[in-house]
Structure formats: C-alpha cells, structure tokens
Amino acid sequence: MKLSVKFLFSSLLFLASVALSNAHIGVFDFYWQRKAAQAHNNSLKAYVPNLEFVVNQFNGSTNL
Image 1: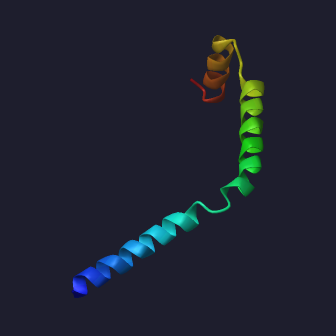
Image 2: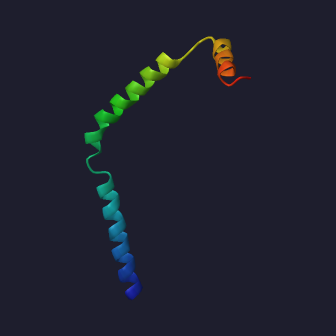
Image 3: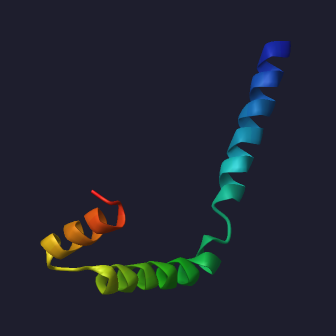
C-alpha cells in the first residue's frame, strides 16, 4: 500500500511539472521568431560565394 501511494504522488508530481513547463510558451514565441530571422539575415550577410578567397584569407591569418 505504501508503494502505491508513493507512486501515485510521484506520478501526479510529474504530470503537474509537465503541464507547468508548457505554460505561457506563446509569450516567448514572437521573441524567438525575431531572433531566428535576425540569425538568418546575419548568415546571409556573412556568406562569401568565393571559397578560394575565404581559404586564402584563413591561411593568411593563421600563417599557413
């Protein structure tokens, strides 16, 4: 009997923590969408289509 009470309590505690961990996720959604858009734009700006230039620049800065 004592084992079933512990199991019931821990199960309820787990389910409550799962329910609370998903609360208010919509509040942060706009923030993370904006951060993703900024990261995508930064990666497009940083892209260099001439790979030989990038390799030569890297080799020059590392003295290879």
